[in-house]
Picture 1 (spheres, rainbow, N blue to C red):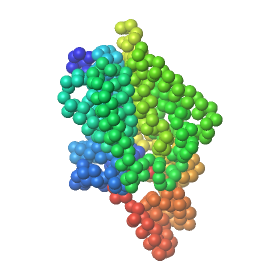
Picture 2 (picture 1 turned 45 degrees about the vertical axis):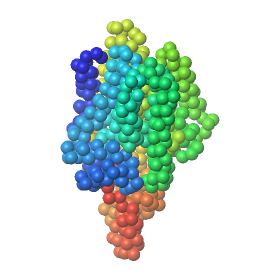
Picture 3 (picture 1 turned 60 degrees about the vertical axis):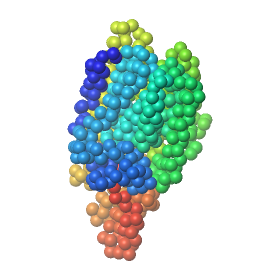
Length: 509
């Protein structure tokens, strides 16, 4: 890694499989969050973002993440609604993460092959496909990009100007303004200082001071999020039928760790709406097995801290970034492929260390073989994003209990003029998840189009009962009541819808 052309070549190798899906259409959350988001249509709203005014506005999608919104305004101004441009931005950020990870490992160890191997393995890992390919999920990529810049602010000689460390702290703030995951970044910095003391030739008191400052910033952001009016993930609002509730959220965390390890080791099949069965009690075998894996990884990190600090770093990196997605604080969706984006570098570090300790021929052949497998799986996974039909058919095939996939397939059948097929998918959605308000709404709209007003009213009333804070249910109920000549009731429902209407777009269905 002592020649610039080697860096360029490695990044080109990493980038090549991702080019397959650049021109694919916007799908899933990209539709409501990007292409149909009225907030992004007005360039003047960028001022609100930069001033931090979206932080307290629950109607702005990604309002808590102004750094992400700013990147969306950049894409909107530069590329309009051409998906390829938006994906090129996300890919550039991903390549930036790869380069920063390699550079960080090089600064920590002084080695050449090890950082390069970790960068290639991370850059091509198929589990990253959702976060990198879909601009609506860019928050994970942007957050890790700034976290890596934050970590780069501290290694180096004591004589290094303080501006670099101050800049690192500023990048931590930008990471926190990208996604809440960054709250754990100071913990990772502390581990780096312990595992690689030669790279941080500062006095112990100075190291502790910078870690304390970083922890204070993270704690301050968390306190701010807690008092802001918008709900933080599943902590508030009506239950969506997917998020984990206490105490099953805590019992499920070890099992989610097992799932994380499995997907990092064998990244197939991947699914935009994966299923996860909650763990109901501490007496569950899944709880015990997950706890065992957590304990084993923690023990391994401790035992290898001197003999193999790179292995310790990899394990601790995964554990640290698993914490925000462990559902100890319940998430709207308990499991998602994109949650693994900041976790994956840790796994890549461990695999790279194993390769680095093989013969020159063996390590090169091993890295090439794994990279080729990753690239093939990545291309196959990206191919599923070619159209809405392919994406949701694949998602439903892998997880027939996915109400989201069934709802999208119902919408697709409805667009194709197959009302009976759409009705069956909506019925399947509410059977899989009776709390899926979007499925009830879309089913009600379908019955309304067929002028089955009594059935439409029943379905829409169920939707507003499950999700009273959703404007779509009330608005369509108002239309249904109006068509039945029940003007006072229709006016009341319309008023509820107007009070709840988010003017800036949403994720749908």
